[in-house]
Length: 427
Image (cartoon, rainbow, N blue to C red; front, side, top):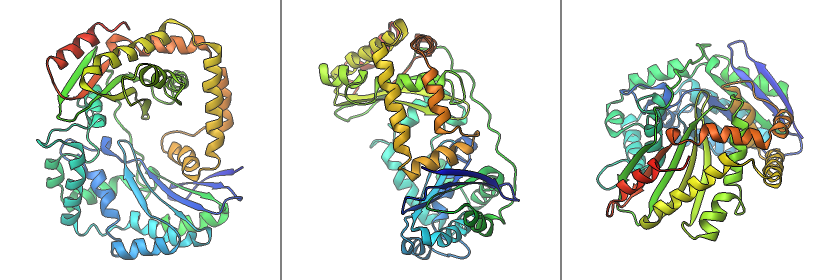
């Protein structure tokens, strides 16, 4: 088991300590409310660029080799990544080496040198090649789907930016972004493992206490999605076509969200769940199929995704629609509801052995709201009924809320057939 503490330093930095005494690994993680949604069209990519530059050196640890060498000597592996709504920096550590982790991460995030920008710019441009085809067209489902759903809102911006914006960014842009967002009131520091709260607070104050307080971020929520269905077909030469079916839906703090979470599990939580059972195992239409909810503080998208040969795109889409229609038309069978609730409870239990999951739940969650405990989540979970799930399905899975994206070979009239299937979807 674990004991959770929440403290606030004098500068406003929230510190979440998760004492898990039976483990032998500690985790240090810093969550920052800074991602691509906090950018403009001109500065798109600056959050991701800044994340890369942190690892280039800081005032006390002036280069990559020194910085990472110290963490590696402490048993760690310094990591970071940028999302649309936040950034995360973390490392596992031997519990006796916590001071080293605090010293390095505190200086890295608080006093970056931001040198060797031109070298890192080339690294980022190479990284961005993963998202485009040989002609330079964006073929990344995540990028394209967010653009389809969110239009010109910053949630549609690419996390890494575009080649044009990345080439235009200057050191002054990174400095300005750092000063605005990497402030105590916009961050959460989380330490988990065989650690002691008092020691964690002392180390946090020493390493992060000089951060300016700053002011918390206030995001502009996206406008409601325009009436659908919307269909986007992007030509690509790959042998398979990637298909994504999206529905904008309420965010995590909305009463409907837990029902949506359970519906996602009904559709995709093991080979006996609806999507893999019907699309893969019974009909052989695809090798894999998935369902997910991409959730932010003020919006979310319910996503179904599959990859299949071009000739099977319409049958896969129609089977997805049929299964969603079943959720709309009929209350979930008692055994199906019991199964997903039971697996959800067990998943929460499994998180007790996963420091990254624990830190993400309480530390990452703290960025946006006061996170609930596992026990509170289970209580709410048990209260969800089959009738409530059906009602939420009716509100969410409608033709006017439907967004369909395909990336693949445009043989014959593939795009027109997909548009027609979306218009005629029985939702």
